[in-house]
Image (cartoon, rainbow, N blue to C red; front, top):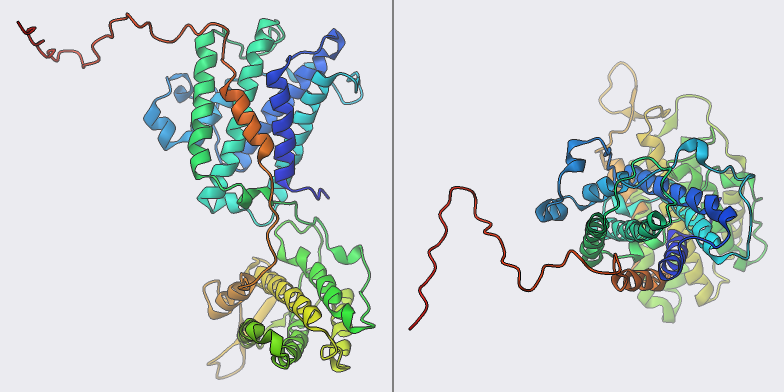
Length: 470
């Protein structure tokens, strides 16, 4: 499982591309040229995958809109689509010409090929993190969506800059979809990518997307044992261990057959109610923690509502026992019964409160996910049955789902500080691209003495010119 967040991968990609833009695009050794071209093709393929998977942009180079000139209003209205057409027009390598990993010559001392391979590996890892992350704020929040679009547009513009140098060295002659490569075409491609990046940068909040990490691909209960509670200081780590057992059941990419049963879910919730009640009394008994008492009371109220909403929930078949989940909860319950909560210091009590908030939020997300699953076996008895009990599913818009959602999304007033991810490398790449002209002599800029053509529609009379003053 990849543990590095998306922000770190984006910084590595930006640093490698900035070095390539500032330096040569091809190594001196001609044997390493296939490594560069293969890495470039991997980057372009990863850009297409990101546009398809994260932005839901499905465009083809054969679309009629791909051959039309880019209009500013279209660029402002659908910037990601215009970026997708630009990626589709990049020259691509024939799949048979790609180097296999074992066939590629390896020269770790060559800086150019290393930067290309770093870019290719980085974007593949970043895409994997985005594909498996939970949650996905760039699908629901405009600021996160713009941050991801800004990073993608930077990579597209950097590839356009490097492609001009590769065309000059005749390195792309064997690629498909190779146009004449006129400087004005490259300048247009850069203007489109730079405009998308600037527009997205105005809205972007990189902190919302840089912290994305890949979710666990299998239940972690196979990877660690139950955390024993021997002393009061073991309660908070035991709560976090319990949360780790619940996390895979709350994520969408669970690849194991185990599901959260009603008996295990209710057993955890009822015992967690005792933990929250004793912890509330411990905080109330401390004169220095009176300000945290409403926080503990709010958590207690949310858990009581969740217990009331899920009362009567049961399994239609023999439930899965979840031995490690129940064993961890039993360790915590025995420690609470023995009075270990009362023996905690004020700092340790607040640590246990934070761990309990996170654990109950994950529990609520796991129960909600199991209830909303199409093939769920959880049922609840309906009221109003005369001849016998009537069992059915909980509705997605019902009271139970609303209560579980409130507990799953509960954020305390005072929480742990969020990590500050750096965007320094991406800022340097933006400055490097800004100060790198698309060609040596700027030929497309209008001449100072040029008479601009009349842009009125055909058939419309021109405005008569005023006579010069005498």
